[in-house]
Length: 183
Image 1 (tube, rainbow, N blue to C red):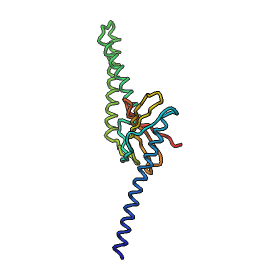
Image 2: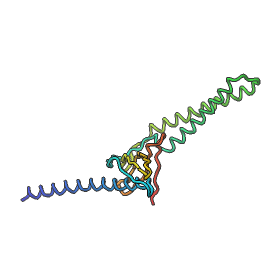
Image 3: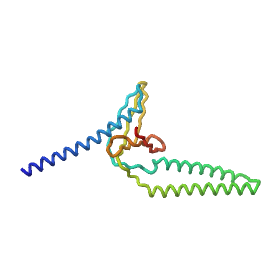
Image 4: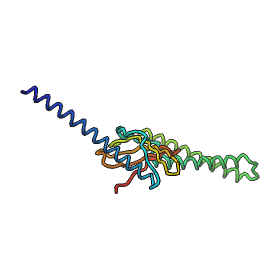
């Protein structure tokens, strides 16, 4: 009697865990489909190009908005540095102007170097793992006039897979994590 009870209990546990796992994937698929439908209007059809496969959530440092903000600031300073260097290489008539430009060149170069060091320090300390799940999701939207557009997103779900917490648009040239507020 005891071996039969253990077999029944084992089969029940296996079926229960398998159904829970499928339930979580199905919820993620429904949320992803609703997200894709939000990109279409009434004259469009949406088709998922692959099913959702959940993975433990990992957010790359390069996707953070703060990283992009610092990189943009460094780019602006580097552009200013190039402009000052071009001015320095032009013939100067005053040693005072030359000294001012040389000082500006030094200041902008130092600021770019500080931003670079700060980014490197933050990246070394950054923990990419986060609670919850993520999935790469691709879909296409076809309008009635024949125009078709493909979308690729990294979708970040909460731990219970009840809502999408954040999105990274992989079609952007600089993908950025965008949090989706509750509501």
